[in-house]
Every structure is written in structure tokens, then in C-alpha cells.
Image (cartoon, rainbow, N blue to C red; front, side, top):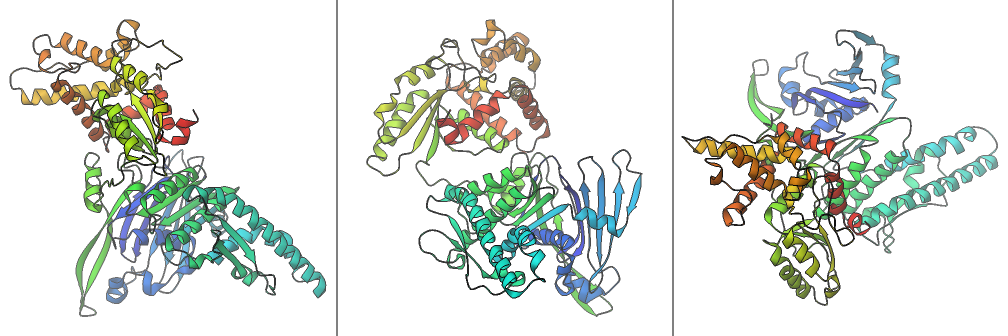
Length: 611
């Protein structure tokens, strides 16, 4: 797949000089920022690169440049570095003048040595760009005829092209009728393929196509004669529906076109896919878009926290607008200079900057969602939510019962709340594989809850080992949520707490535990049954016999709970843009894949229920 590796935009609308480098291993690129900071202009500049005939000097040249300087360096220049599958890079630049595209230049940068550059001629550039299929959905100006035209392109070429200028009128009419019938069959097939996607958003939604049987026009007008409507029983055309539904239909049409695209690399850009959609539909749309990244490189702009990966910040770009005044002697006037800039997001506090900048808040109005997970404590909630978000999984509503003994009380309350209501929420009860967790597991009688759909499970350790009614192998183990976390990562968090303890202690210093030792012992039968917190506590006291008792990771008293919660909170904070801990997650995932597999299973209701 050919991908955009780097873009540099100069002198285009609000952008004076913006360069963005992308991680080519992640095909989902998010551009965020306040209104009018240049997010849309960034996508429009890429669109102009692929479609230079759209160039409009009056709108595209920065106003202060166009009206103020009138110098030779006023028109836009857009440069894109394309990464090829063999790691070679092709750098192609579009140079515009005051009226039109001036020239296009290209260089081949060989992967074996960046000093080895080879100029590309116009024919080579043209052949290369034809290998890329480019789609751009703006937040306004949706054109259904345009996208439908791209759908019918293939059947037009096959069924109609050969006979459009030959034969008598009856033959032409016969050929055209054959074309329209074949077209309708293709569109019907397409609607049947799209409808399962639509029905994930609402059960009675679907799409259909129809063709005016009195068509007398040919290809130049054929797409305008195709009627696209939402098949919800009202038979209204798409224009009669709400803006959110129109836009969703348009995006899903592109989704299906991209899935069917062969032999070309795909670059797909969407300006604000979240617009007009409530958060529930945004989450479903994000899931569908993420599936496309196997076939396409996606660029989106957004204000929505649903589409912003605020944990790894991978391929997340925050833009801001700098406004300064320039005085041009030649025109004897002052002009406002607008300059879109990328904020340099610090790896440690980058998430905080994005949240503060966009005012992102987590809203929670409903008592229960359709699918929920209830856990013993806040630490369980933090670990599961954070890991799900890190891996880009759906995050169900997770409820902390503040103790295993409270879970049955919670279930009884929900049972009374949903008494005789139409909806029947699904609740997965996740319990630690310790004595208390196994006791509550046995006490929960699923059939007693007629107004809830209850499922129950014991949390496995990081190796994927667990205990259930059919397997009593680990029935005496004392495993808690921390045994589910990658041991090396957990040990680094423990050492971080010890480090903070040292900073507050002027006379005595804790010695740190060895993550490799803990990881090894956690797999040995002599230690494994006791759980990783016991091993950590043992090793900490061995290394600190005089002061080890001043901090405790396993005591049943309240201070221990505070330490456990501190570990979980530190885990969440450390994972937000911190490269050290992100790398530990990747190492853990590679070594112990059962952790992610379990999260994938419980994050989606159908994954868990069908297991």
C-alpha cells in the first residue's frame, strides 16, 4: 500500500508553512483543534494536490499575501512524500502560480541511501499518482450524484462504451436499456451489502436505489437520474432526511466503494465525521472506519473525544491559529496574517493539553447501557478501561461496586430499576480469582434476574489462566486484578511509587525491586498461587528489611487499598503519551497475547456472549 509519509503545505489559505510527519504503521490520522484553526484547510490542501483543477487563487492564496505583498512567493506549494511498500519514498510537489497549476515536480528517494535521488518526469509522476484512489468527504457540499457516478463507472465502461457511437437507434436503445438494467442490478447488490452496516446503527434502516424508467440521457447525466433514498418506510429521498443520516449514508457508501477497490492504494479523508451524529453512532462509525485501515490510509478532522486517541497520541495532531499583523509599505495597509501551526505535544502532558484545548469531558447520563461490566473496585475499572482504550477497543460502561460483597446488592438494585421495562441490559460480572471472588461467583444465581441478562466470569492472570465451573485447577489461587497486568509493567509502577516515597523521605531510601525476578517468580508454582502482589511485597521487604513495612501492597486494611488504587491511577496517567510505559505495553502484548484477547472478548457484547 502506498501511504502519505509527510506533507508540507506552504502559503495555502490560513497555512503559511505546515509540515506533518505521520507514523506509517498506523493508518488512522486524526487532526484536531478549535474552530477555524486550519483543520479543514489541511485536508483541502491535500485534496488540491490530487485535484489541482480545483485551484481558486482568490480563496486559496492567503489574503495578506494576495492583497498585501503580491510578491513572487505568494502562491501555494504542496509537497507530499509517499512511502512505497519497498520503503522507497517519492516526493512530489505541486507548484501553483497566481492563476493555475504552474508545474509538478518529483523525486525518487531510494531507501538504501537518501543521498541517492532520481528526478521523475511528468509521465512517471502521472503513472504513479494513478496508482492511488483518493476520496475526500467535506463536512458540507455532499454530492450523491458524484459518488454514485464513481460506483457506475465500471459497468458503464463494460456495457455501454463500445456501442455509444455505433449502430442504429434501436441498437443503441437496446444497449442503453441493457446498461440501465445492469446498473440497477449492481446498485441493488450494493444496497444489500450496505444494509447490514446501516442496521447496526438502527434496526429498520436500509438504503435502496431506483432509476427513472423514462431516462433519455446518457452517461453525462445518468448519475443525476439515480434516486437514492433511505428505506425506512417513508420513501423520502435522501434530501428529506436529517443531516446526520444523510452524512452517515454518504460515508458508508464510500466505505463500501473502498472495500471493493482493487489494485490501487486508497487515501480516504473525512472532514468531521462526528458532525450531526450523537456519541453512540460516532462509536459505531469509528469501529467501521478502523476496519478500513487495512485497505486505506484515513485522515479525519474532529472535535469529538470519540475519534481522538488521547492515550498513545499516535498520529494525533493538534492545530492552533496564530494571528499577527503585517504592514505592507507597497500597499500602505495593514493585513492580518493567519498562520496554522501544529502544537508540539509533550509526550507526558500531551493528553492534558488536548483535553484542555478542546474541552473534552466524559459524559455519563444513563443508569445502564445495553452492555455493561461490573467489577469489584475502582482499580479493576481503571485497568480495564485504560487497556481497552490503549488497544483501540470499544469501552463498555464499567461500574465499580466498591467491594465484591456489594456486587449482589448492585444487581438487586438494577433488577428493581428495570422491573417491567422494555429494555433488558446485559451485565458481565467480573470477579477476582481469590476466595471472596469465587464465593460471590457461586452466590450469583443468573436465573433470579428476570429483567437483566447476567453473565459472570473470573478475571484470568496475564497468561490467560483462569478458573471456572468446568476447571478447578486454580481454585485455591489468590489472584487479583493486578495478576492480569503485565508483570514487568506492574513492577515499574511499584518502583515509581517507591521512588516518590524516597523523594519525601530525607533519611532513608527504598531499594527497587527487580522486574525480571518478579516476572520469573510469578510463573513458579511455589509463588504463583499467592499472586503477584504477594511476590512484590516479599521482594520489597527482602530488599528493604528496615523500612519495607512502611508501605504495604497486600494488607486488607484501608492503606493497602489506597496503595492499590495509587498503582492503578499511576498506570492510567503513565500510559498517556509516556513512551517508556507505552513500550512496556507493546512488549507485554507481544509476550503475553492472552491479555488483549481477553479484553477483545469482553469489550463487545457479542464477543463475550458467543464465547
